[in-house]
Image (cartoon, rainbow, N blue to C red; front, side, top):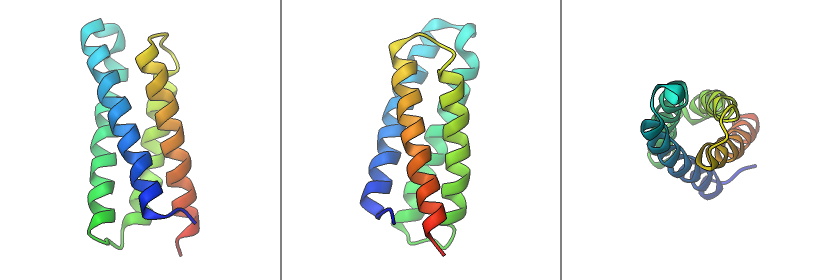
Length: 108
C-alpha cells in the first residue's frame, strides 16, 4: 500500500514539473496550447488531492483515480513535444499516475 508521504511526494513532483512545463508552453505559443491546458489541469487536481489527503477526506480514493487519468492525459500530450521540460513533465505525470492508481487500488 502507498503511504501518504509517498503519495504527496509524487503529487508535489508532478505539480513542480507541470508548472515548469506550463511556463515553457506559454513562451512557445499556440503550438503548445493543449499541453499548457492539461498541465494547468494536472496542477489543479494534484493540489486538490493533497488537500483531500491532508484533511483525511473519504474521497481520496476516488480523487486519486481521477487524478491518475488527468496525469496520464497530460503525459500523453507532453510526449508529443521535444522540449526537455515537456519530457520531464511527461515522466513526472506518469510516475504520479502510477502512484495514484496504486493508491486507489489498495484502498478499500
